[in-house]
Image (cartoon, rainbow, N blue to C red; front, top):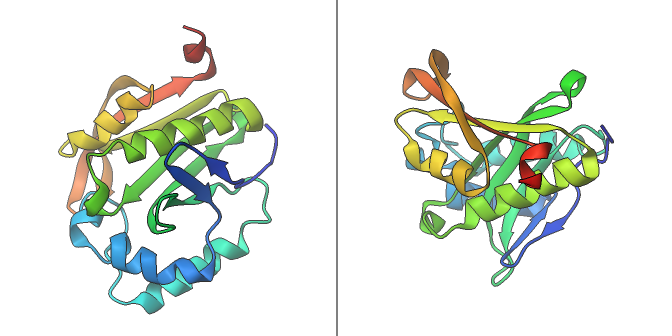
Length: 184
């Protein structure tokens, strides 16, 4: 695994880049304060933009670590920050990563998150040298599973009562892609 950290990635519609403090307002207004966005996540909606700023300060301070992968999703057309995608758990001993993502409700259902996830997976496989990229979702949030499928991940199974989110203990549905999957 190469410790390249969070590098800028561009897709047809998106710029995936490191956060800057100026992203706090967009992050708070577009997704971090929305309880509908955070419903199935492990962190609660932010009660104020000050919480968002404190979080961004921590994230930004970690960018020099080569094993820190955390992107803001920005629309090329407007320059607006609309979501987040990151490695939430890195397993260096097996060259694997677990992903997490969230995005403003305004942009749900437009294929933006699968586009971002595919781009990050390509980077993690091709440049960082990972062999496995996985993600999971609450069984009650199947649209997140569609994102994973559209990005090329395969369903691996359900782990019953394996996680906790803002709704309580939940079943996790796991998807993953391995580097060799892309050869098929």
